[in-house]
Amino acid sequence: SALPAGSEDDLCCPVCQEVFRDPVILSCSHSFCKDCLKRWWRKKTTHECPVCQRRSSGNDQLVNLALKNLCESFLEDGDQTASEALCSLHSEKLKLFCLDHQQPVCLICRDSEKHTNHSFRPIDEAAQQHKKELQETLESLKKKLMVCAELQVKFDQIAKHINVQARHTETRIKEKFKKFRQFLAEEEEDRLAALREEEEQKSGMMKEKMESLTALRSSVKPGQTPGQSDLQHLEQHEGHGLLHSYHSGPKHCSSRTHPL
Image (tube, rainbow, N blue to C red; front, side, top):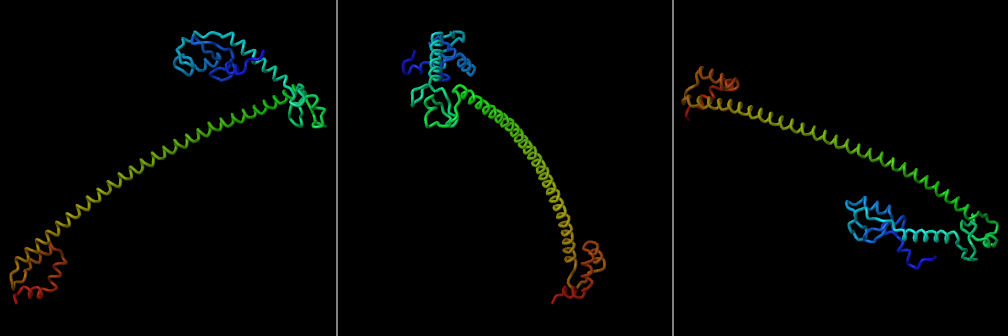
């Protein structure tokens, strides 16, 4: 028997939005497909109604026989109606399938001018053929999806390997430059220390020479020429350069010591 208009919505599971399959009813009076309810509860930590969230013990679900029978009758009526579809032009049953136009037709359509010299197959045979073709296409798509999934896994592994290698190389580079900076810092410290030591040595030598020169100038009186002992002292402490300069112009130096 035909169902009242809009009653199809009442035969749909709130979870999958399809006509109930093996419906069960909870203590809160809400019904669901048995498998839908199981899948819903697997995602939750507690058993609760997907509609009103009322807690359920998990054992209070009962088979809703009245709803099950009603849904089965509805599905059977739908299948029968689909199998007895009528031609929109002649109101005859669609028993043939036109291979040229790729559409179901009735016997009157077959004999009409529109389908002259067209090829036909029984509707059930054509349906099976189309089903087979769809299954083959589906299998092909499944294989392609498997190949894509395998490639995705492979690409993910390669990307992970590249990332690991990059991080490893980055760590090595940082360690090398850290050692290099440490070496440069130590080298800088050593060279600066050597420079300070050299500066102190040379400054000490110059200080000694300046002191010797000051002592010599203090010991030389106006009109007095430095003696040989003074020259030897300068040679030992001042170097041959100063002694040679002194010997090359003693008269000049002596004349400069006399007052004008």
